[in-house]
Amino acid sequence: GHGTMVAGIIARLAPQAQIMPIRVLTGDGTGTLFDLVQGIHFALNHGARVVNMSFGCSGHSSALNDVLDEAARDGIVLVASAGNDNVNQPLTPAFGRGAIAVASVEADNTKSLYSNFGSYIDVAAPGSGVQSTYWDGGYATWSGTSFAAPFVAAEAALMLSNLPSLKAESVVSIIRKTAHSVDNVNPLYKGLLGNGIIDIESAVTTTLH
Image (cartoon, rainbow, N blue to C red; front, side, top):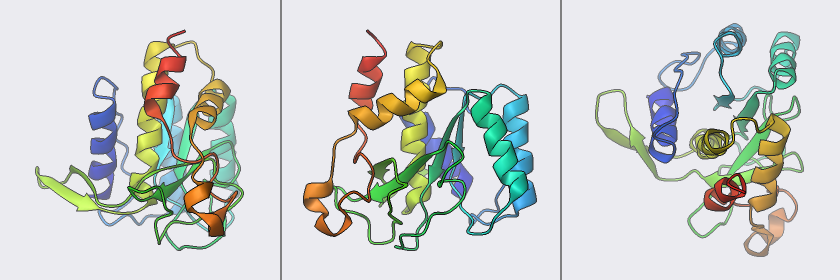
């Protein structure tokens, strides 16, 4: 269910994008570091240009860090969810290793109660009450930063479809620069929600010039 919902969000926003579904988590969103490393390696070896990582772990893993570094060197756009513990505590892969760290905000741009925050956050996206495809062939509604991250992954896919020669660092830079600050409605988290809410239209339009 977890992965099917993530894929459905990307498909809805970037319907022409090719989705490479790689199962690294169970239906409720849990898994092992070994599975994660294998999954990212598979994406690297099969031509992925954007890797959505709706997971996080607090422990150190040299194997995971190594594969993320390899992905960054290969020019892959890495997108990671910030986590759902409402803490200023960086998780891997959202922290460091070149990934875009995505927090969750509500419809009024206030931080979702569950969303992690911190100076390592790059941008925010909708994460609450997100409706998407479900494993049973229907639709379901779920909340979490896991469902904010694919908004950004879809944004990157749309940009790359317009301008395939765009480098990963440029994709990240444009996503950040076109985001809108939400500090004014989040005074307790000023500077801890990155550049703010993403603006997919502005980011994609930038790649048309």
